[in-house]
Length: 201
Length: 204
Image (tube, rainbow over all chains, first blue to last red; front, side):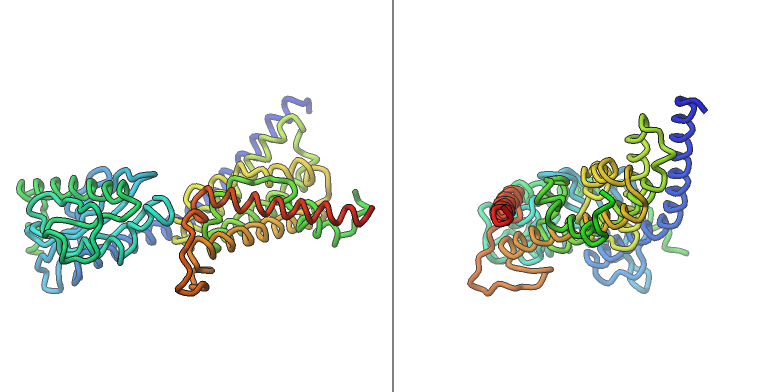
């Protein structure tokens, strides 16, 4: 066999074997990866809409999904919004929960982030950041308290705390939540959150 | 080269030809993921998996692959194992997979791996390549372990997530930032050079 033919044959065969091996690995791990993702989302829904027994996707578009949370009796107890947006370094994926009428935010949970370790990454810290998001008034847009304060009582009902040294990350989280909150309110007003109609079943 | 004993072939990866401290290869993952010990270990293991299997396959196929397309073939072989490692971690160790992020797929272009295929596996038997890959992997894991231990202890006051420093200790945030990686690596390289030059003068 001359050289060019051998080169073509070797590369083709290597490519084919590698491709088929990866196809098998992909098939074997696909379900498991999807399952992990699903579990992560379910755990987050439970965290931001406590008491959820049944959750259902009621609205979805690119990087924006709304889940309805219902208790055991099938009554709507809140919505969980799963969304993402740009952070200081990379995409931040988060989920926040509201009551059924979207008048208050229950709490916030960060699912994925690649902010600066030790600074921006504190957005996942309960003590420093997330607890200041509990039970916020969602009647108007949420705003950021700068400079940071120490206790929840010093904040206005629609105000959240900044992380000292990571103002940009705090601000990015805030704008992601505010945008999605606005969207959620509009969808709610327009009656696009179809879960109510499915209650009969 | 065949004159080297099996033990020496393995040991050389630990110090004499340590990929990080002596050859200065694979600096990108070394600097990027050593902010916590668990990340360093996971990265070391994933790289070892790829290095060992690629070395085995490349040394087994060395007669079949024409030298003009060897790099392309090596990269396809390496990329296959990297993707397997990546999917496997995403499926079974989701938290680690998440914290390592894009650095797992980037093992494809880690020069330790391609470097060993070029410098060793493509010229030696399957057995010797395996020993060489094991030695290099151990050297790489050790280097990452040292680096990440220093950075995690000084940067967060923890080791593998457990608090090891007392309450008096104020974490040096800089150690878990990129600058800390460069500073730590620089100091370790200097130490390695000093030790190397000391042992050399003693031999002479």
